[in-house]
Image 1 (cartoon, one colour):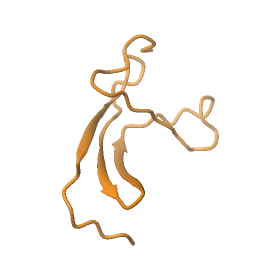
Image 2: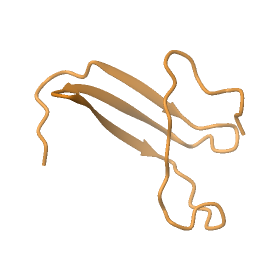
Image 3: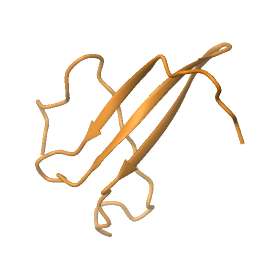
Length: 72
């Protein structure tokens, strides 16, 4: 297990779309030697079998504002 002793350098608030309003969470970013460590905690992910048979989910982060153009 990695122990991070420094404060994060940035964070992102995670919110669902109109289609998935229950999704919420937070991602925090830590500077590390040669890169960045991202720690994300997300709840309310959909359990619909037809959309995600693998159980894996992905996300992306925008600098500044949100991702509203393609919101579902």
